Image (tube, rainbow, N blue to C red):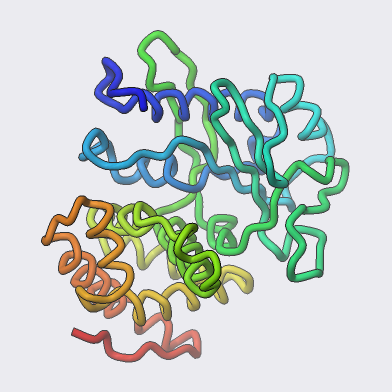
Length: 291
């Protein structure tokens, strides 16, 4: 594994940002419909922090708001012309150094009705262009324009692009972990401790009031509401005690730092207490967080 670059960022992360910028430039005509999600979006809200000590993302994740997506230029052609290769799954594209960029859409915008369908059907675009991924519904309504810059000092590129809000990213990570835990056949291999640590980073770096503002936006949207309420239920069940699943996963990713699990539990309890009035007004109900 490459070590840290002269920027202080791990070399793998510098490469991942470069390939993400490659993809955004290739899809420049579609930028209004693109939302950066995943770990690279999370780090725009949390800062560098302890990046060198902790595991880093080595790919990039993009969500599409299909409502705003134009039919031209065709996505697969644009990426192929930029020297990306199709990866092993729909929506997976491999750039320089085999670094992956995943392009995803929500089930409700996928043009598919089968529950097990993986490839989205987007008007005007190839069937390999994007993968159906639940949990991104809040990002479609909770995002803001930011400037993404290269991390290599010799690379002066910058791209203005929509980046998912912290509440949407927290929800997406929660749904991702919950979905993988449900499938006992693959949970051992697919649940990543780092996803829980990214959730903790958001809980620590973002003011609770700002997370609540994002969740309020989710609850006002039919598709996002269902997903965010589900994520909050999962946080209640799996994140409010230091011995529960999410704090334990985060602690594992932090090399056993014993302060991580109680911090995760306490911050989750604070968020749930703050958001509960909104949930009650929306017709849902959260139980009191466990201690």
